[in-house]
View 1 (cartoon, rainbow, N blue to C red):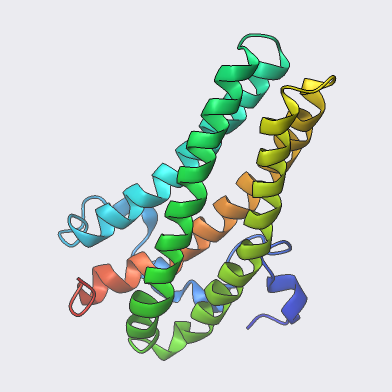
View 2 (view 1 turned 180 degrees about the vertical axis):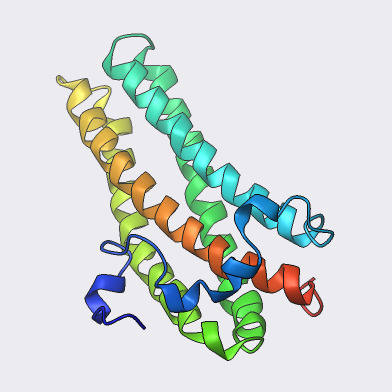
Length: 193
């Protein structure tokens, strides 16, 4: 690696993939992904799933801020958080299970230079389990709090938690894309579909 210690590469501390794991990204930079003949199919589908997670977080942030600003009522806010929060958590857990049990074991063996990257992504998935549990608690607190004497306290906590969640999820998704998309574009989706 680059002299960083293991704690620097944890999801909460990482600012990007170490240079040693970006070796394929140099050959397949993001700017060229959509023009690559191998983009359509698995790669575009997988990136659309990532975009959905980002959009769900943005939606929950917007809805929470609207409730705090008095632009939406408590019932609409609570219903939206329950719907979009549940979708977000369930879909993300399913996505990670497929990656952990199918995609990562296959992709890990395709290039020794980036094998350590899959250890990072696996560690991210474990860290995200706790982070998602915290989000569920915050979301439930906000939903239940709307009928209490101080309905905006839980929503305020949720908004703060969502900002942290968005930062960590985006870091993970970006690093995952930077590691995996170049491998699939180079080698094709054989064995993954």
